[in-house]
Amino acid sequence: MFITQKLQYRINLSFIITLLIIVISCILYSNGSLDDVLALLEKDNHLFYWMLLVGFFAEIIAGSMGMGYGVICTSILLMLNIAPPVVSASIHSAETFTTAAGSISHYKLKNVKKNLVIKLAIPAVFGAIIGAITLTYVGEYYAKITKPFIALYTLYLGIKILENAYKEKIKNAPIKRTNLSRLGLVGGFIDSFGGGGWGPLVTGTLIKNSWLPRYAVGSSTVAKFILTLSSAITFIITIGIQHWNIIAGLLIGGIITAPFSAMLTAKLPHKKMFVIVGILVIIMSLFTITKSIFF
Image (cartoon, rainbow, N blue to C red; front, side, top):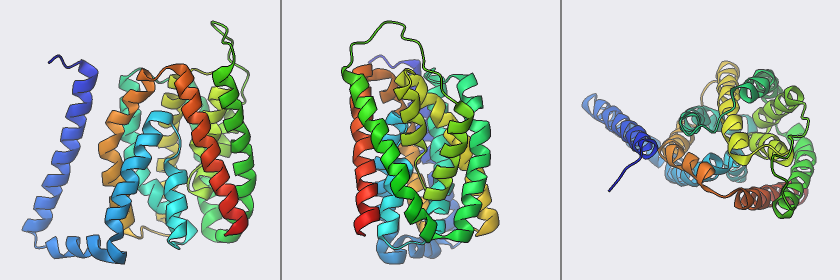
């Protein structure tokens, strides 16, 4: 059976990750730390295993569509009554590794426009730092006010993306002018403050403005990695690292999936990409609005 270089790369990366997990487990066992590991896995009614499942499926969506990881994880953790700063800190700590793996895959698959990454990532770093500090000190009250307005905008984007899917396409359609610096700054703040939202806002806007889905997803994923790292470092400085079971579950579940999910971006036809992304954005937005109003 013929194996392409791209597929072989993803297999090798997943093998290395799996091997790393095994080596770390052996070291912990040899040092007599296995009981501590088992205690961590059983903590909070075996929350680690649920986070493993969440991380796995959230990364499939995020890696192939460029959005959804933070929104899905945040919604679940908030329903479990985890404090918002801990939610965002845990997600960004785990997402640093998953977005790194996804970014490498997108780069190898040539889904990345370097100029687009630079224009998004630099302001996104500032937005992420401001968002993390704000969330740390103002807490959940302002987040509940902000999220419905963000969700209304992303709902509008989802509808426009679906419209684009069924419009008659003109070959070599020009890319609409987008203020990438402002988009990156706002997207970075929203993602860090709300625990997610970069994908629906930034990737959704790029696709709406006629960027090819593969470049919109690939470039925004790389920019997302940079802002996620900035956000995680900020949270570590302000509140430290808490809930290792959440971070470990999301990390292990997502990082194994990330190299394979990037392949879907290059393989899916553009029309299907628009439909899937549009529906995904609409569902997530409606869920956020409903939860903010009634819960």
